[in-house]
Length: 296
Image 1 (tube, rainbow, N blue to C red):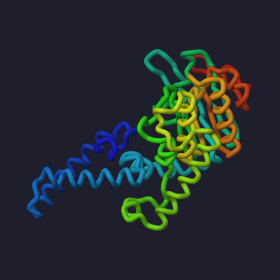
Image 2 (cartoon, rainbow, N blue to C red; image 1 turned 135 degrees about the vertical axis):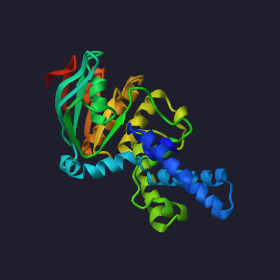
Image 3 (tube, rainbow, N blue to C red; image 1 turned 90 degrees about the horizontal axis):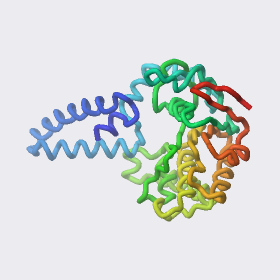
Image 4 (cartoon, rainbow, N blue to C red; image 1 turned 180 degrees about the vertical axis):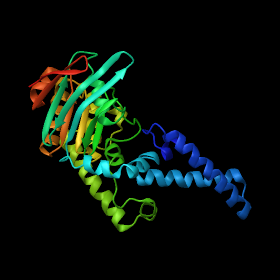
């Protein structure tokens, strides 16, 4: 509850969550004294209601909305980028190591950019900076919405492929009250999202009702890409999508990325398979020691 309420990504999320839970404890004690209910029971009930609200609303915690509110003017200017992403002079150091050194790049809608380089060249650091997973020491990033897949295969083993895609989209009519009451708008939205998700899985050749843990590794990698795309993000950061995939599955991943490009997504791919790079990339950026040394 602490992590979800405060925000799992924000550095101060856990601290904010603890503060909220502290306030909740005081409220629970007051309610318990009025209703003659044990403090532990009323606290658990309030925590459960809060958790249900957070999950139903797809909220990303307290810290980020508050920070966005205070930086509203700056954020408004930055998100005017035409659905793509622009990074300028990104710098990140870990002790004496300069993992990113003045990296500037632009991801245009409807294009696939490949980021290549040897191990230790800074590719993963740049990807994490662009995704907001780590803050840069210097530089700026402007975007209209980003989703990132990880280098390691990461799926929910007990969820089906369809449930993966339905877990990510933001609901316009899926708030706590509408979800609990199953209002006509909430039901219609769920039906539409399910139809879109099934169509995406059908195009990729993934059975929608099979558990993710039962899919081959290549299809799990493909499912990660589809899940990121289902979030509605206009920019996708894809880390080694063909890792562990067979040549057949690698082709399916390439076809899926090409379809997302045709859907006007801006895509950045970190990839060691040069065959995949040649088939999908509109532009190739090479990194060396944290710096861009070549663009083609």
